[in-house]
Length: 405
Image (cartoon, rainbow, N blue to C red; front, side, top):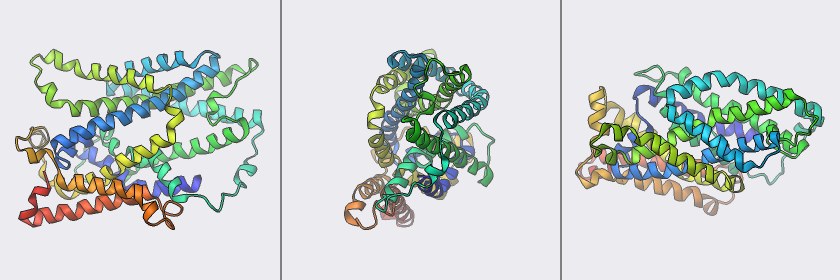
């Protein structure tokens, strides 16, 4: 597991770094930039697709946090689905500025809570770390599949989202490696810790979620408070699943919003979108844990190709076309009248090829995929490289210019 996480970090660090730096270079979300890569109309469709995926992420974390509170209070979990969801919806409606304040002061609580829960797990269940480390992996281990799963859980599935938050950081006109590394390292360290503690909890206490153990009535109050702090940590991270989900939806319906004559009515669209998506996420919380692996595979299938395509297009083509705020407005927010500008042929072809390869590489080369190499990462990378070739051809051969929107 730790080896798989490490390889996932190595493969995902550069894409995540580049997307994070993209946000510092231009104050736009990735799916707004995608309008010039995939075409205006296709980007709107992708925004709707990723809205659904973000609902899944929100629901997943909401379910985990609700399990904790249900275990602490010995009350039905359905109550906590609603209460946890309502708190997070409220935080997101307040806006990113207040979310950032919330993160700043809950980070310390998060660390302390999990330190206490780790101590409780080790002492109460007599965890033997030497036993855990000596467990040999099976010779039939599917290393490629494991790396893909870790990429979907961590850096690569979230790479395109990092620009949504890094656009609030210090602006930059060039890549800063230290700033860029902060994001992938900040993602991978919790995954390491969650993996180790989750495995130990499952192995010794029959529950990977150590904050939701079956706490007996004699459980010390400081342990219960730590579990409560862990649920706060879920809220801490999960609000950022609903926030970009709402952003994705607003990107998709942007032309409709513009038609509102009343500025007041237009301002209501974001809180209404957050409320609708939040309620949908609470409902999905009820069954998301039963399909988690299928959900993560779907995340990889739909997000990995987009990641590489956008990176190549931004750094090699689009970046040089925007220098001022007026450039940004004209370039990314003007609705094109030409139907071909709504469809990025090169990007769509590359996306489809990448997704198909992600599915069929194990069939085509079963000796390598997924036992040794990660098919989803490999297929997505090939799709990105195909886009790079088509982009270069479209720019150099006038007869092929229609490939780009």
